[in-house]
Image (cartoon, rainbow, N blue to C red; front, side, top):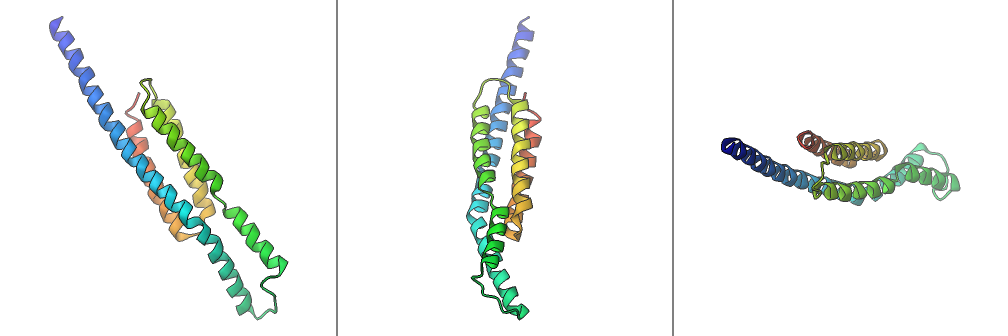
Length: 159
């Protein structure tokens, strides 16, 4: 019995240390995701401005006599801006990040919940990627999804 008790104590201690290490690694990677999300948010307004400028340039180069302040041109830029709006996705990412931290601080089994949050984070980054229409945003999305996949691999070791 003493040997069994000692072995169980050692196992519990080892799993506790491993859990602490997994938690810290996951928090570090979550911080990276937050940095990528912030970079995406900061860069996204320039996508619309660049689209407007490119549209104006293409219209000028076409030789058509169009007033660049024409309502149709402005409507086109407005439609593009609405299609590229990622504010909802950024809001949901922030919410998921907060919930992720909450789960990591829980003493209850959270493996399935964390796995679900990983799926939700992936969904938001995918949506941003599909709306991006910009190489810089796409690169941030790829970096975030790569980091998220590393988190997901770690989460597979959490009960």
